[in-house]
Structure formats: C-alpha cells, structure tokens
Image 1: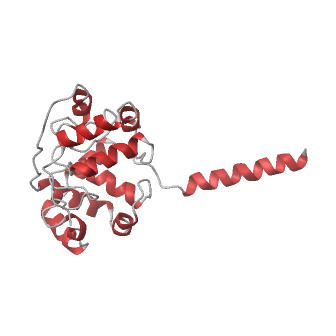
Image 2: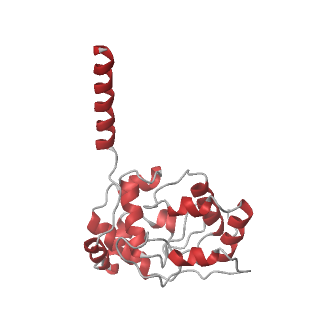
Image 3: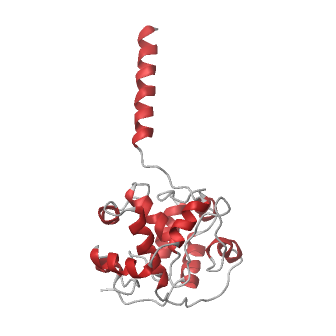
Length: 211
C-alpha cells in the first residue's frame, strides 16, 4: 500500500511538471487588443525584412505555395496570436518556431500590423452554401473583435484554396487544436470532405500554378 501511494505521488508530481513546462495558452484581454492595435506597420516592414519573412510569404505577403498561407490583409490580431502560439509551441511548425522564438511581443505586434496593411487577394467565390452563415459569423472581415466574445478568427476570403482545405481537414481530424474555444473542431467535424472542398473553393483565391 505504501508503495502504491508513493508511486501515485511521484506520478502526480511528474504531471505537475509537464503542465508547468507546457507553453502558456493565449488568452485575449482588452489590454492585448489595445497592444496589438498600437502596432506600427512601418516598423513591422523593417522587422519583416530583418527576419526574412519574405522567404516563405513573399514581399507582398501573398503566397505562391499551396502549403503556406497568404497573410497580406489578414487581421493583425490573428497574426499576433499565431506568432505567440508558434513561439510557445501551441501550434507546431518547425520553421515558424525558429522565426517566432526570436520575436518579442512588441515586434510581433509591429509585424502583424505590417501584413494587415497589405492588399489581400480577392476570393473567386462560387455557389453559396448554407453553412457559410456559420463561417461568416467569425471569419467575415467586418466581424467586431471583442475580448471573451469570439475567437479572433482569420479572414478566409482570398486564402490559398489548398491551404484552406488542408487546414479544415486538420481541424476535423483534431490534428490542429490551437483555436481557443475549439470552435473549429466543433464545426469542421460536422462537415463532409466534399463540403470542406467546396467551402475552400468559395473562400479561396484563384488557383495558382505551383512549381
């Protein structure tokens, strides 16, 4: 009995250590919204050049790779959160971690402001789907962002089509889970793969010839 109790205490201690060393999950507050809003696009442009963001996202923030998202015209709040998630390994990507780990929160706010200021590609559109009303409740570009009201969600219109489809499938299969309230997992698991493909083609930009 004593051995069992000792083992239980040790296991509990290891669990506490694991929780303590895990990256802190991001939470929005009014202060954070104000902090991101104060980002300087001009300073962000310099930082994007310094940290070689164009290597993957190009000078204009518009991707020509189906595995890399276009970030031009994206919400600064969304970009800021993703950089934090990459830095804290909440969202896992080796290349983005290598870049984000070097950034202070102030630098993240400036870089996010810079990419938000760029022109976003337009969506091609297509046949509307009933589920789009649910999608637009968070992803439409004019949705008002408020702390503790909505997950700060990305603008979908103009995104790389294949990237959109892949990302929604990842949420559906719970291979990506850095949406704060797990809303994307809740919504996407109800969609068929064909519905996900159709949504990606509706919101996505024109197809690009990839090398």
